[in-house]
Amino acid sequence: MTSIQMRENPLFTRTTGREAGRWGIPMLLKPSVPTGVIDLISWSDTRPNDTMNSDRGVHFFIDDYRFESIYRWPERSLEKLRQYRFVLTPDYSLYADMPVWRQIESIGKSRWCGVWWQEHGLNVIPTVSWSNLPSYAYCFDGIGCGSTVAVGMIGCKHSKRAFLNGYDAMLEKIQPEMVICFGTPFDEMRGPIVPVDYMASRKGVR
Image (cartoon, rainbow, N blue to C red; front, side, top):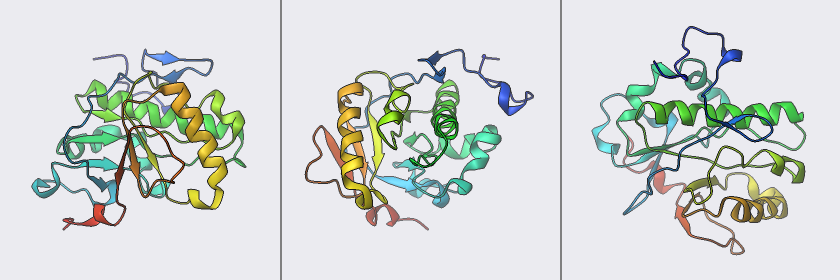
């Protein structure tokens, strides 16, 4: 049993043995860079024995309540996730009006899931999110320099400037090898962006 396999312990005692930064955010290993066409399927659309979508990655750009179980009982979804090419870490909500401790918790839970999946053999790509300037102190923790990352564009058009400020900060901090962008990127976004069309991600789902 690895240090992260603590299924019998309460949720609040979980640790990975690989924490980083002031807040002890779980630290992901650098993922393998996906090659070829990048396509995604929502966690809500995954199912057992899904041979049709096995060449896709799984995303969590959906409401939090739809995937809370993957943190509470991670072993229950492991075999389902193994079917897919790679998996993005959960996109827990991060809003500027949330208490700071809740924002840090959202980042920590996302990274924890990613480390747990890596420990169990999945290729995991970290999803990066941020809220306001103070969140930059912790929202990029747990992701190594040069990693492939994913960002979601859903809802960010209402706060374009705040999104672009955080995006630029992410580029400077992480210097990603690839940015998987779920949705249409803004024209101002720089870097090695690979866009994934939101509507096209529904194609082929049965």
